[in-house]
Length: 289
Image (cartoon, rainbow, N blue to C red):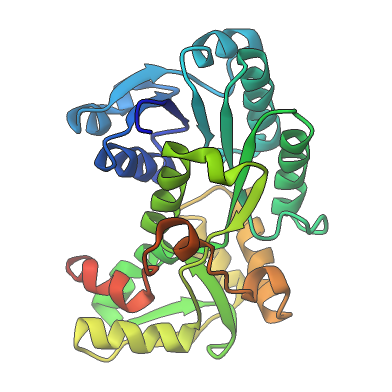
């Protein structure tokens, strides 16, 4: 099972790196494909083979690299042109006759009224029409985004967002996203043509505050801010186009749009494990808060 050669494209990002580590723990034959190998020292130190492989390379050039692998994970990049980049990788995978391709998408990919939907929908469409054996992993917002509030939680015992504290929404811990992907990639035969939504918890910001209070053993509260204030804060971590996309997701949560509030058991179905709740996540990373 683990003799299949797996390439993770986009392996230096959070999802890619976490998936490579999960595959290494499963004793899989994994290679990290990165744009700049000099930035992948952490993966090399973990004993993972690193190659220069970039979704932005000419299709035929990328296909020559992909021919050396059986299964491919396309971690759609956090780039404004990600539709073009991911589609280029899919076409290269076709040319290379990849046996199985797994691609990162997001839960609102069907919503063409929002930026992320407009970006991810064409990727899914291209994949389904490719003739390849494929799988799609749709993710909601990340549990790990709370790290962006770490300093404020340390100094003020509070964290912020633009929505009411009682609005529930789904999140996924990156470690869960990685384990689901790794489990599929080492044995894709049960996952042909499947689209999964990987969610770790459905909860409100107020409920998350209670979990953080329990984990950190001091009162933590959620404070509703403004969209303008949230945008200003997020611009410290990501480009404006991406910030605007995230704010659109918050507006979908406010409207109780299904893509943001539907909990899925897909993680447990795939891995046989319980997902990482906000409580367990914070218990793991208390030192950062």
